Image 1 (cartoon, one colour):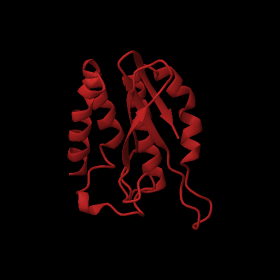
Image 2: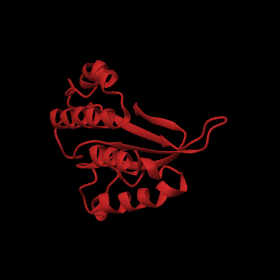
Image 3: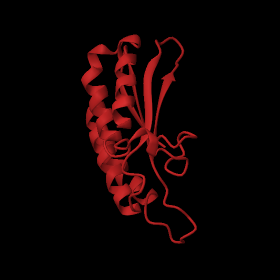
Length: 151
């Protein structure tokens, strides 16, 4: 599965970024975000499945740089199956938000914005307009608490 390939890459990066103490939190956040979206074979990727990457992979690993701080490991992805309905994607996105917020210690803040994010992935009013997707990024650095961002 594509999830296995991406998880293996993430595991190789954890010691490089010095976030070994946060390994379980990183893997929990990864599972919450990509449990459904990466549950495909690598050959099933296609550009219409996701806009995060040109090949359709709904996941990306990034480097977060800040002045005076060591680099942080960040990853970005979409929750839910790419072929799911807007309602199912909304449900998956909100579940992922809550799970990742728990990992990052921002449960209260996530609950405050969940209704807003839920409206962003509501079913479109016109068939030609696709439902909006929410991308999430989680950042882990050796000298700072984890952070969660919704796009």
